[in-house]
Each structure stands twice: as structure tokens, then as C-alpha cells.
Length: 96
Image (cartoon, rainbow, N blue to C red; front, side, top):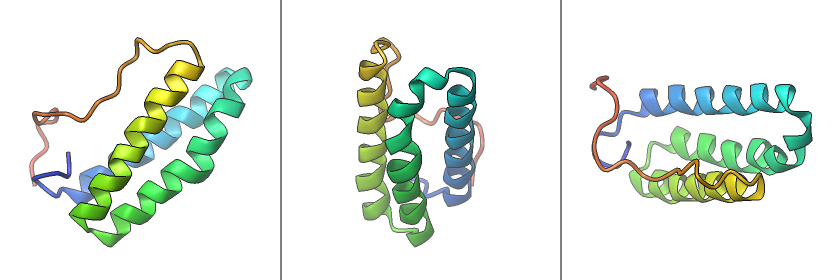
């Protein structure tokens, strides 16, 4: 996503949507709160800080950590078939 286009505003928007989806998921499935805690209190805030810097190198590092956290949580919740990976092609028609 930010690897070549640097559409920071879109990345901010997507991060907000990810956070809301996790918060809604925890509300609907409280047993998953423990799995989501680290993601909500550490991973997402770190990604938010990376986005504020508008630095592609920092973003890419944190994006990889974000992705790894997603994969780990999905495995922990026994839904590893929900695969999260870095897109190789633009997924959104939104252009900057």
C-alpha cells in the first residue's frame, strides 16, 4: 500500500477501519479480548506513530509487524485460513 504510492491519508483511513473492526469484533466476541489486547494497545499505536512520521522505511517496518501480528492472532484464534499478506498490486481504486 504505502510502499510505492505513499498515500498516507488512505493508510490513516485504513488503520482507523482496522481498529474499529477489531473493537467491534471484541465487543461481539468477548472471549477474543485477550488475543486483541496486544494488537489494540501496542501494534496499532505503533503503526499510527509510523504513519505520523510519513517515512516509507519506518512505515514498511511497522507494516510488516502489523501483518505478522494479524497472522499470529489468526493462528491463535484457530482461523489461520484468514491469510494476511502485503499486497503486490493496488487493491483500491483510490489514487493520490
